[in-house]
Image 1 (tube, rainbow, N blue to C red):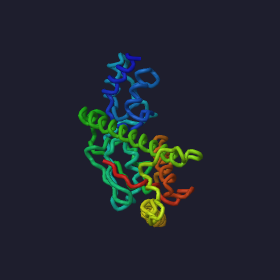
Image 2: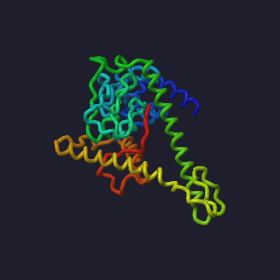
Image 3: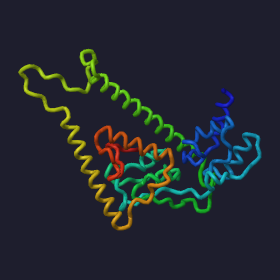
Image 4: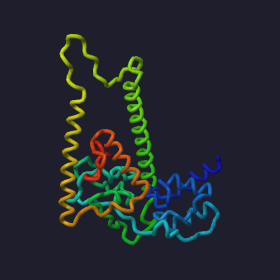
Length: 288
């Protein structure tokens, strides 16, 4: 196992770290591990191109072979560009970006930070209004000629930071959910630990405290109004023949992100059981 781990590290060092999933794995690291243990071939990385295959072949002591066309083609590196006039601020592109190269907020125009974009194109499929273009920005240069080791190292660092942040957010959400269950569990009310965020019980004779739900209800109303505006905008675009064009053939990993966003919104009561009338928009967050 130690040998495989060491080999996986060396293989990962030779990958471009675009985190594009074209290799068939959710990120560069899982692909490196699969190559190391023999469950994946070393010609499945289109961003690395022929040069990347040659580097891996030299490391593995194997012959240079062509890029597997099932994983894509070697091409000039693209850059994601968001059309400000069409973007509806749904945040799905932000959730799909593996290196946090998109900034914005719900119902506000999003922007791609050009120097951080890896050209993975994962932001395109979930966009419900097809407002993201991917023009090539490296001329005729492809593979490692269009991507430097320093860019790869920076992309890996951003991806790892994002994964760590998402893990912290999941753990925090699970802890909050567990606390809510413990404080409202049937038969445990007398023994449950007090919720740190719950209002103090009213004292006899004291004036009723403001309902703790008021602020949350107001927040939900604001978000629901934003969703309604987004729905109307979507209908207007559809009437003009500019409706959603990128909602089919979404990869499993991106669809999982969209489904997770919908599940969070449903738990918060921000959507009805059938959320298809409005583009998916999670609770207000920003990405950096």
